[in-house]
Image (cartoon, rainbow, N blue to C red; front, side):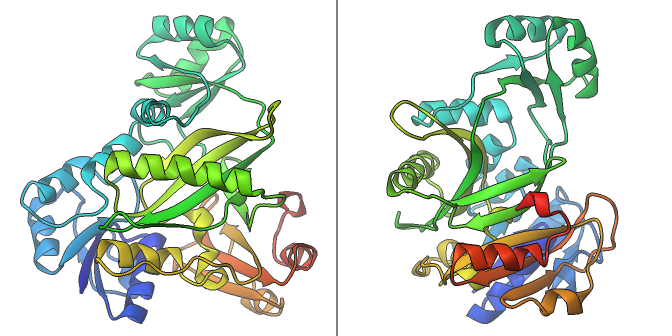
Length: 369
């Protein structure tokens, strides 16, 4: 099999590495000649909307996928309209690129979400504040990630500042909810509709960037896992989804026990699933390739307990990381700069307390654990 990947970042790199183990040739398309994926696999250097380059990628591939949701949806439509096998389908990408469409889809399939309202201008922002209340978050409908494109709203008096902060572009106002923690559910759906899910993971963010994911999520109950899988399966079926899907969820305390609210979805392999490379029977990258290539899905059983620690802004001393028992270092071949994800460390252990102690030897900020 030959797989084309639109995007050559670290996710494309890890897809290519997983493909090599499966005998799958991965080719990426990315504007950067020295992209992380280009360091390990063949690459086409061109913009994401270059139609000649897209057709070149199609000629080199049996199936095409994408590695991040800011790929132009029009590019995926261009290929799909020409009969090129492409998974997930363009509809999933279009929904994920628009927070209003995303939240609307959540509620349509029965996944509760924080209260939200569309904001097109300053007047509609004031109307949304009246409808939802404060505190709230103003989020651009498109192109926001890792905390970008967001502004806190505490009342009418500073609404204009928030509107300017997000660039005066179409947005949504979303209620700030008193969640107890954030978790992710990651699963895969095959072309025949078969699904597999990994245990829920708990995420810790700082400055809008994911810092640590713990798998399985501490105090994970069967009821919470079942509910998360039910919501994810409903989204997959509605979108006729093929591949790995990640959904970030808020856990809320309720009278009948913990409840889940939908935050965001990612129609691709996801940062909070990197631990699966060493920590699961099948990694999310191998699973995604299996799904889109029509191969049987792999098992998702864990190998003990796992944590994923993002390396942000600065490169670590590899020797110090590798001296930690159960630690596995992954560097992405990027040049350091503030706020940039340069790699990650997977840490494995037999029990939660041993895992915590090992993570504390790796992580630069103990408060993230």
